[in-house]
Length: 319
Image 1: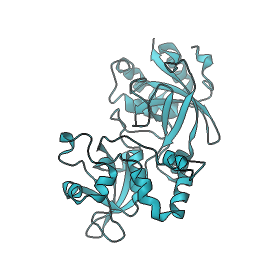
Image 2: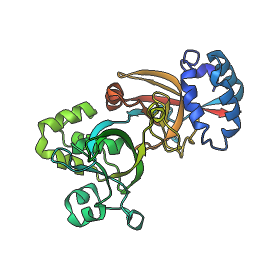
Image 3: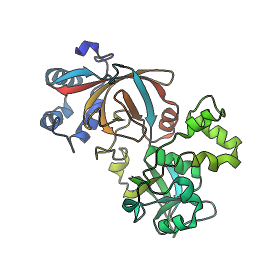
């Protein structure tokens, strides 16, 4: 494609994406590694310099599905910020687990319902707790997002913010609780605000909702310095995500570290911008499919919970 075919190409403040590109250059793939010295040099450049360099060194290619469709789906994800306790209490009783010791020996591992209900399975997880949350739905959201920040109260009463990051799963299939509610005829709109409203009205059916998704994610604890707190969690590429400039993709279609032009218009947001393919997710499959990292504050959570709209993508590949 020609650069003029990219909607909004001349209008994006590219310097906002440069931090994300610099992050990708911490762990570049073989295709983009030769460009990283120039990317670093241009980190202090003006927008026009960065745009001219990209046009000289890269070629846009429209991403189509194998069936020839150029329109796909954009959703959003974010990093939840939650309260937790290092020890179980009546208020904080929902555990976040490290991977069980025998995870690699049994694939798939036990389902969410089996973990919640079978004492023999719970025995395998005893001592693997990182922290305890107050709400099982918050734990589900954290697992769907793949990472989060938890302000933990330690046993001595002190508080500190930690990050819990993806460390594995039970290898069970991901099932959308929103799709389950739609199939039940309980909702017409499967956004997270609607799901949470249904939960508030149907407290006796919460476990039924939770167990409709058998997939469980296990976490590892990471310290959160002031510098690390300015960026998101590490994505599947192994680099920290940048709000509004990192996307999750299907790596079988778009390699990690690829600069991508993203265009999406819908009721939630209008996007025409440079992003970096730096993450993936179990629900992100197919070529024209992306999950847009929105950040970690309340606005980020609201946008991610509502975002579901048409998408077009162009990869920017070295000439």
